[in-house]
Amino acid sequence: MEQEEYQFGKTLESMKTLRELGVSTQPEPGYAKYPQAISLKNGKLQGEGAPIAAWRWFSLPLEEQSVLTELIGNYARPRVVIHAPLENNQWGTISCTVKAVTSAGPVFSIEFIMCYPIENR
Image (cartoon, rainbow, N blue to C red):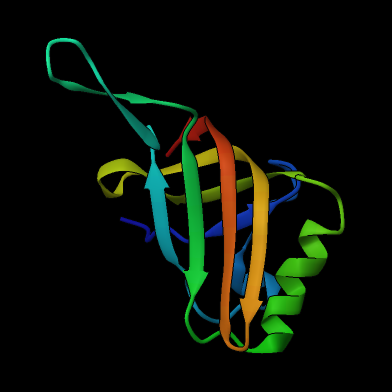
């Protein structure tokens, strides 16, 4: 079985693996199908909200951070397409809005909101 790889692009057609983009390390992923929980009258919790995702690197060289920052661009909340592990370590391709890009030295993260499946592999 072929090993899945993180992919990133502005469109499905422009997606490339992080390695092809010049990013040598894989991020620590995060994904939540329902980022908020609400209490129902019967005492149970129900998930609510649009799916969110995050990629975090704890030691990403500044040159590699620049590659991702340039791809995202200076647009307010751009839409991107990523391929990453989702629920239960099942990989999928999702269209997301970039909420935030943060950098503090080698620590770098991208937060995605409104993540909707395009296809599952």
